[in-house]
Length: 464
Ligand code: ZN
Image (cartoon, rainbow, N blue to C red; front, top):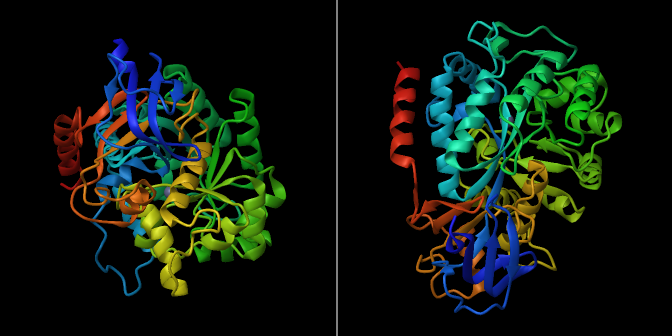
């Protein structure tokens, strides 16, 4: 790398604490920020200038890559009452047809879409492990490796979370035939993870953890065995779980386990900052307060939760209790962190008939508060040093288009409001840097034409 490719001058950059002027960003060959200097001089020779205001890249804390290929294909009525569960039957039929090559093409296109939208990290909750009939690939980590390779090729940072899916329901019910591609024991899943990290070693852009799928898909004993095995291999690595997306699973948990899912987990496990509870949608007041206190991250996936008709998370109470959250695009019905944050606030506005619900006395601009909180919570969920323009963190950021109508002529304290709440024309995100590399230049990813044509071939094959 030349010296000029390792430094960038930004007239305005969003540092921890807010907007600063004349910020010099410098990073090393590994893609890690080495200095972040506000109030610096602009005229250093050889230093490139950012084309507009610079903000940190957003972590995407929840993704099922293959589901990208289903987006837009389940928006019709197939039953008198369509629900999450009827959608899941369609999704399983789709998952049954995915090939290793198809998954690689879908994942790579998805990660390019994420980068273009300003997501610079992704947590992949990866559960399609085996061949369509449930037998193992010669390399049990075959599909996970394809997904890791797709992330590397696109330039996005990844936290790969192989999923333990063991049972079809509470009470250790046997898996269904259409779940055979997902099924492992704690031992076989840990073995898969060990192969994976041997073949694709952790580095500054790749980290591993695990994802027990949900309390319906694991037992208390298997969850304990999984975490203890993980701690032998990768102490303190991230643990993500789907927790309370559906009222039916809350009811089933109450019936078989005698407690609501979040309460059950908090009572039995040492839930702390390494945990991400995805879709903590259905929580009562005591669970909301206890989850906030635990330091775990609530993984909110607003566009998917709206698309699937899940319900509305009590965001105001949770934020008032000091709870942390991040956002994920999950089923990828949309891939845009701005929509996730907008919908987070709009769900509250519509149900309360108020405005600016998620602002606070200290942070009166809703977008600024939600942006800062989702950077912080999302970064925590990745287990990587991301989500802030500060020394030692990844050189991940977005350059906004200063001429875009959501930003132009506005004062800096209104920029994030325009970026998050306005939907006018093309994205205001102009350039994207991930690990110090400019992977999106003037709204185009370096590899987007090739990846899109591969994606279309994979999709045509799936829909044949
Ligand atoms: Zn999910």
